Image 1 (cartoon, one colour):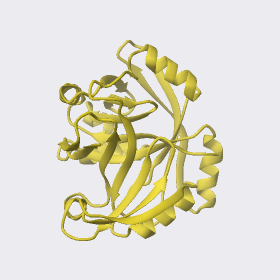
Image 2 (cartoon, helix red, strand yellow):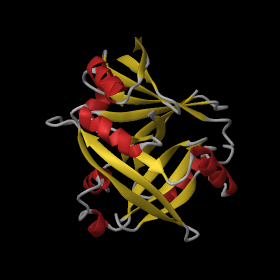
Image 3 (cartoon, helix red, strand yellow):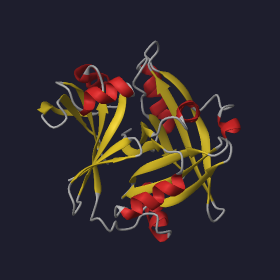
Image 4 (spheres, helix red, strand yellow):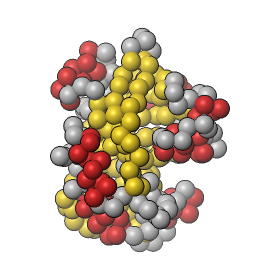
Length: 269
């Protein structure tokens, strides 16, 4: 059993407008479709099989009635007041084994259960997923775990044939890492390393973020936990939004820099 980075969820009020914005920045993004049972819909931006999901609520009354999907509950409670990064998903090809492993780690598991999305052309995408949480803990949302209805290579070919996976005008972009603002970087990294079987790649001080950081290696995109080392972006994230993902680093861009996009920060390197 091994985990891969699957995607980062970015809550937005209008996936349609977000697609237009991203295309202006040289990112290839497309509308995904509707989660009819959850009252949400999305847009997608792929970097090989790692991607960003721009999730919006189009049927608030439906979304507010959802009880078994923590992500939808989070979206219904957050939007439309606050756009921004929500949490990440990890991919596996052994979801029942992964769920049992999480239970053995003392985590509360909801699922696995089925998910689906109707594409713009009417076809349906299916998957299985489960959520985990640490009993009694507040703040940082743990990843949810997903298993797609197709093997990775088959799914990649399908997404390429639909021009969902497509070259970005901005350059050969790839997800390098997702950064999390936390109060205790060492503690968070130790737990996630143990729970998700990830190798620590070292700690360091990031002078630009004014943060003490600890990185974990994850195929498809590393995870970096950042605690404040002084006033800066991490401190502001904790004060304004609490613990959670706040920045995604993308390599291969022709233009460098950090751009704020709808409550999240995108670093192009």
